[in-house]
Image 1 (cartoon, rainbow, N blue to C red):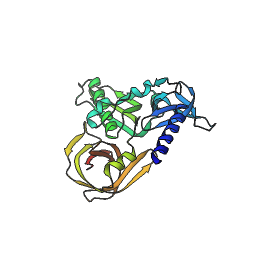
Image 2 (image 1 turned 120 degrees about the vertical axis):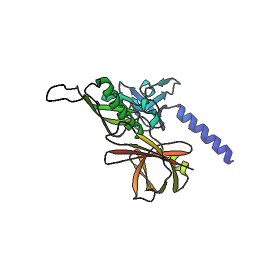
Image 3 (image 1 turned 45 degrees about the horizontal axis):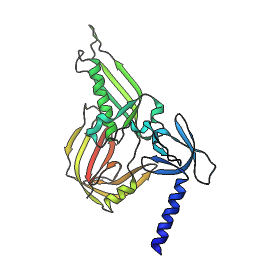
Length: 272
């Protein structure tokens, strides 16, 4: 009898969903009634509601309409998946504010590069600055940076003044997808102590990040949620208790990020 009821319930649910449009996001899907697909956003209502809602197209992977038609959104296919700092080149840079609407804001990023001598070319200096900016973003779990400021000054040659060229960049790091807390809870399965694997450090005045093996331990005391982001609270090597944001995880490890005195840290910890 119980099996028959379960089958009947599944059938009823399938029929109800078939009468609605389905919006597929990175971490969830919404059964709704689409009202309008606009230039930047999609307007819809929830079942048995008249209140109009909207969601930016940057957040939508596809819509399956109740007619059966499928619309894939190119806005989300432009974002690359950044699995670690090694994927920093996959971070994209945008100077168009509309391209980050609806994405998840992770924090501010900035970078500065200066020539070693007055003969260092400007393009080489810019490349170094953008590389550092993308590394920061990758360490934060981002895959796109909205550029808010770009300043470049050429080399100065003179009898009294000699100054190498420099470039300074500022922006905001975003991602179109966030790690799910429910999946993380399942991964650690109530575990409180974790062994370290790797430590990544990016100093504010460094040209690149340093990566070293990390054999320390992390002791977890709590998992906290702040909006769409979630954090682990605990101690590294029995130090003071700090809140670290979880940037990503896979089947056997997770990565946390922490910033202190303009220095950015990633710790990769074994999950089991």
